Length: 219
Image (tube, rainbow, N blue to C red; front, side, top):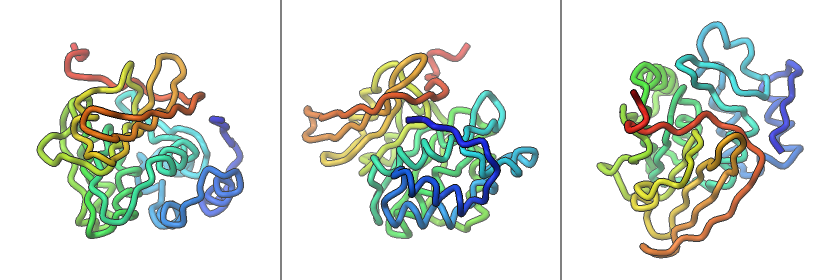
């Protein structure tokens, strides 16, 4: 599933590739991909690689995720206008900005990033679009961001060994969590919260992510 296209193309052609292969379907997500330029969220030396459908390094052992993967995760997340969304591992800010574009001024996206330098980098990148509906916090994403909970949607950009209960707790009933789970290769797991004590999950195998790290694992 996690195909990489290494040919140089335009961003418009890349989006059309993702539409043609069925990874992008929702019109609002498609429009966000056209409006929010990936190159605006990359380090200077990586900007010319923005249309390569592969993860790109942004420093500190982290990446700006593969567009195919971002498209897939946003589609299964099903963001809507007006949603309050938690973006765990906001990194470069690209996915945060895509979500902010989709939820509009009536919604809000709360990013959390454990690496302070990347938190600042992502904020600076998102400011290029003058969003008023983004709040980014420096912190441990495995614990979520309780101050702004509950969330309609939560999306996680790194792989957990198991789904953190804190994220489930901070999701409203009827909400949706999308998170990679596993070791060498991961499943993208979609969690629907049916009641305070009941969830339903669906898994999509064949992806690779950097690990989700908690404060307890940082030496």
